[in-house]
Image 1 (cartoon, helix red, strand yellow):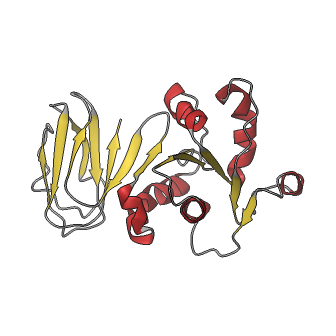
Image 2 (tube, rainbow, N blue to C red):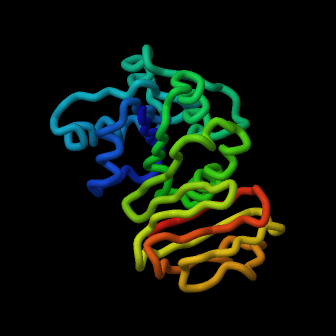
Length: 219
């Protein structure tokens, strides 16, 4: 079972992220993303109506008319400890624990502060929701695919693929194989430290010195 979570950033225009939405068994919109989703729905689903299964958030970005129209699909979280993307992930995991793939779309663009927050939260979900460690979890836009890692992994990326690695853990060492520039001596004390790399083999390996959290960005 696959799920697409639509956030209130730039709605994707390219075929692959739109395919992930069209193919999803479950579609959840963050409240502010509902309008963009409804506008794009005819083109994404080939003219077919496919309403979201839930509209999740604090409802501060949803008009009274849409609140009334979708009242049977609204999941209202009043608390402000987490953003709407995180509330949507939480609701998805509570309502459909059997989901195997979670694709987050529309999470970047528009506001830089929202983009940074949404992207960094991908790594946090392994701590907040340990069950996601056994699922496919990524954030896909027109420009890149991002996903978290919590331990050593071998990834099929393709020769020539642009690869960036981020981590908030400055005690973490990541030994790499298959990248043009080794990450072995990188100290992760700022976000730029292991960016703008490139795969020189079809598969790359990122070997963690200890279980932690990191984010991989593929362009």
